[in-house]
Structure formats: C-alpha cells, structure tokens
Length: 136
Length: 136
Image (cartoon, rainbow over the protein chains, first blue to last red):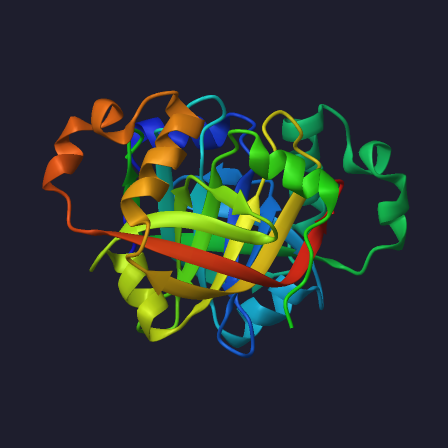
C-alpha cells in the first residue's frame, strides 16, 4: 500500500526545504499551507495544533498531498500523495526537532509566543503515490 | 465575489516565482503541481494542455488553490483560493509569454518537443479568498 521515496527526493526533504501540505476543506476544495517537514524513513512528519484548519480537515479526511519544490531548481518537483495519521504523542519533541532543523533554535526560543498555542499534533504522512520529475 | 490581490503578493507573482496549483481529483483528494504564472490584474493565468490531469480536474470542478512561497523568504506565503475558467483562446500566446518570463526564451526554443503537445489551454484563476502572511 505505501511506497518508498526515491533517494534524491529524500535528500531534498532532508535539506531545509519548506514544502506545502494540501488538505481537503469541508466543502471539498483544496486547502494548502507551507510546512516544515521531518522525514522518518519513507513517512513525513509535520506539526500542527489541535483545531487548526488543516488538523480538522485531516481528522475528517486523512488524504493529504505534499508538494516539494527544491530551492534553486525550478524544473524538479515531487507530489507525494499520502494517508495521514494524527497523534499528540511526541508532538512537543517533533516541533522542537523541526525548529532546530529549520532555524537552528529550539521552538521556544524561535517562537516564544508559542507557549500560548493549542496542544501540538504530529501529522504522519505515509506515501501511497509519488509523482514528479528530476528528484523522483 | 472576487477579491483584490495585495500589492506585495502581486510583486512576488511578477517575479519568476514558481507557484503550485491544487486541483481536486475525481476521488476528492488534492492534486498539486508546480506551474508558471502570469498575473492579469487580480487574475492568475496558468497554462496546461487539453486532457492533462489538472485540466480534466478543473473541467469537472473549477475550484483551485494557488500556493505562493517567495524564493528566499521561508516565512512569507500566500494561499489564493479561486474559481477557474478554461479557454483555448490565446493559449499559444500565453505559454509563450510564460516561457519568456521564466526562461527568457520562446516556448518553442525552450521546449522543442512541445510541438507534439496536445492543444494548450488557458487556466484563468479568479481569486475569491486570499490567506497568508508577510505578503498579504
């Protein structure tokens, strides 16, 4: 059911590439936001908070698409369609790991206002199909 | 019904920023691909070909979302939700204008194999909602 990620795509994900996460709105239209991503084998780990739009969308419909455009390489891309599982387990550790990857700082240092955020959620995307060119 | 684009977002669109276009698959899941974009006032013009996946999706459901991540500015983004109209009128001129904007070359010079492509289609996205930060 799940598929493996090609090695060049893994490298781009392991760089500090900001990716976009598409979810499905209640009315069926696409919702798209930029997100940090951490790779766990072939799965992608993304952080959000309880009751944020994308979390609500994914709780209702677990199908998500992650789009990857490598920085400085406008002719390569990947579209990763996947199925999502949500959990609060390890959610604090994940946002901290993401912050250290993308900013070099703990999340508390990078975004002090986050102390007031709703509880964090781990979005685990298991790829079921990968399309693209150049890096797939 | 339609909304105006904020000026900073217009500037990013007028740069050679590759954006992503999300459409809705027949099964309701999101399909996302990177595209060139030309701004026409508050509308976005995107090129595809007849019977390509995204063209079929938009013919069935005209709701589309364009995601904009400015190059080199990972903390700004825009999500433009819009309604699409499709036409073949001016489709050859559009792909040529897009190619000149993004590559500095005519499309025939940039991609000689395109002579064998299916007919081109103009995807006109009229924004109905704009979200984001930094550039909106």
